[in-house]
Length: 509
RNA sequence: GGCCGAUUCGUCUAGCGGUUAGGACAUCGCCCUUUCACGGCGGUAACACGGGUUCGAUUCCCGUAUCGGUCACCA
Image 1 (tube, chains in turn red, green):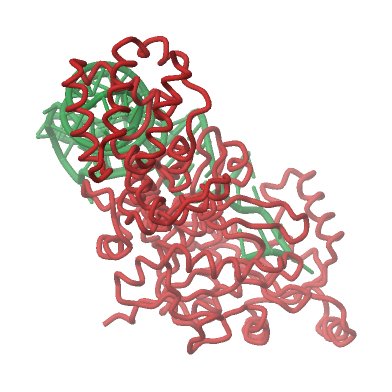
Image 2 (cartoon, rainbow, N blue to C red):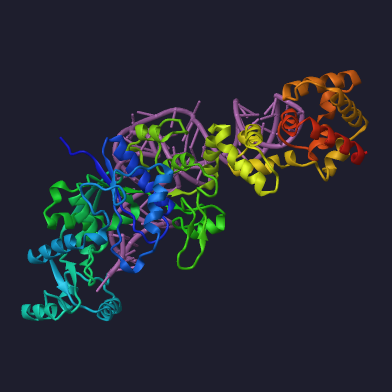
């Protein structure tokens, strides 16, 4: 019998949540739900220097927007509260001191300058790696080299100190990553990492291991950038006596730049004209605004679907998945190992798929607002009709209004190329005949009826419909392209259609 | 540079010893249509390289190359 699955998403509130972080959260969430387990949100704010106001709220709002539900966390509570690491200081300290007592860690008093000097010395001596380790620690100021009385005196005097892990000199550390298989690292490659900083707060390494253990985390699903330090974490579990209940690890492939080298960054967003953050973010220090997927018009379902497929694949040919379907289909075995380039074109395609699935009513307010923002009064009813007319053509809801612009005003100019090619005697005849027919028409002004009226009128006038339709469109909208003309007329209304026809006849001749 | 990881169409990927190497985005062509889109149909396009193992390697092993990550009192 294995324990119920518990996973955590553990971001650092140092700014807006990066889209890669959203994917990590998503995979954690999918796995938790799939396994019938719990998902916790833990805020890793152990670096006071990097605190950014608003970042924590941003993270919570972003997860909520994409549809990731947190079972336990600072905002929703839970049995392992607090879920903010800055509020768990004593817990880490207790474990750190325990490690020192058990001879698995030690106090170190070296100043930053002394550390720099040490690294420089080692580099000049061509040492394989300039690290604080089993050999170099003997030359530094710590509780391993200083007399016990000295150490006590320094601590009592309030001298700043850190606690470092006493990494073994020769030991093979293995871990079985769920995605990558066995990874072996020699302990000589791991240095004596700082566990507890001089400000009394833990580093990521200690905090993450202690919390994951205390919170009963069964699976650590995180980005590949953590793989190099994973063996260190294994060592920590061992030294803390928790190796038998150590969580399983799964290191996710990274999200890479759309082109060129390196991992996806904010700079790519500026360059490529797409967002890398879920929500818009205003930097509280500089006032700089970074665009967000939400504000750019992406539907959360589309973003989720897109993100899920960046590094994972269900193994079938189904592409469109609701969150529930993703949960059902998700498995860690199907996560790809290699990094994935971020291709925003694919994201747009997913959005297109979801936009066309939306009801007209749900999209209409966007259209209404855009129209009124541009100075055209628009009822919700009209906006709904326009949405129905155009939503299948666009990738984003905000693209509907620009496509529908010609509905809102009589053309003040006409596309010259179309005029030259299509505005001939037949066209004039057709426009005139249709105008006359419309003048006496008393039926309902609906697309189907209009279509009949036009066909009938043209037949009587002996004009082939196909030859003049583009000219009719030109007369009514000023352009040669656009959505269904009959539907367009229906929305414009009989009055306005007549006005436009008359104007065109005056101005195009 | 040391360590760790990765490598299938331009991109996301399927493949888990024998396949005409499949799908999607993008791209190109055709069809549909009153036009532009949407949509439908079809095309171009990939196993990084070199050694093994094997009757047989995209698939397993070892090198090489390339790419990525990481080497802080940051996470």
